[in-house]
Image (cartoon, rainbow, N blue to C red; front, side, top):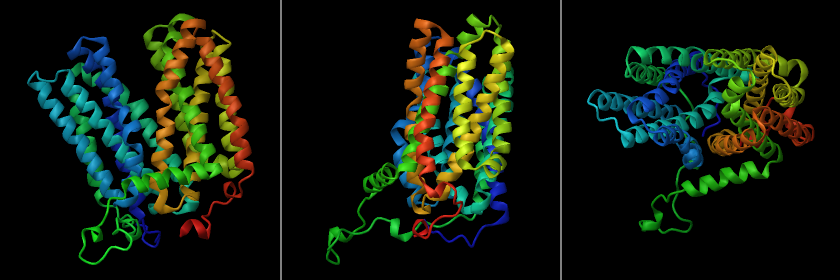
Length: 428
């Protein structure tokens, strides 16, 4: 990808924010409505769980190729195509639902394709943002982006989606489709960087003019290998990637047993479960809003390590009590700390990774970060079954605190953490 940053339309970031807000609200409604729809039309627990899992499988299958394509093609266009794919899938699902043909396999396929669109969009979006925002404003821009996504998806979208599903099963799906169309329209107005000619497929070395070998050869696997090697050989990127995998495994594992803790340990009804989840989302909004200022005030290393430590202590607090206010406060603190970590870590990665590698590095990062989630859910589920949900939260707290040590070591020994500008070598 070209590293020319002269063209930075003032409206580019606002269009990204508008597109993120639109699709986040629609996604939140779909997250709430899809399990309800699956349960209503399938009446089989295994099929319902399979549909839910199908939305995350594409991260394991396509994170690396999607990252490579985000470096080889225009990222804005890739995001628009992902939006259109998801809008078409949702509209077809509505048609099948209206004609009583939305059975297991069509619903499974729709969930899978929606996940594919999410992978393409996310890998391209995190690589596009540095081209429409000056580097000194990256943390602030990422903070606002995460805040918009959290409010739209976790607070507004999921609540509205559950309500609209009671109005009509197809209503949340239709609105989600519209949200993707609005996002595509907004993104079309962004003038992002053009693909770097050097990243395009070239002829075989030594090929004679006119020979078949002179034709462009596929470089997808080579691009993927280059992206994986780039992340693995950089100690800081490697530490950030492994830490993200641990954090997400712990977080999803705790989420998987949280409803059991609310029911069995706290003795609360279902309505209280949603309220405590909302407390975590509120903490996330606050964290994403103040992350940039916190990082500037105390430095990136304290912000990142402190976020990890706060997540670990919150897990220990939940595991050690049956008091509702302590659990609510700890869950709010977890949301706050997780967003501080996300904003600062993502901004740091965007700063130190060359533009031509951003898509592939994002794909590698997301593969590890999201690929550990199912493992975390299984492990914490087993711990909860054997020793109770409190023990699962305590385990997560210990694991997260132990993660502070290697990430702190990697951050302190790397001078790029305190330098918000890319080095000349990174710009090449």
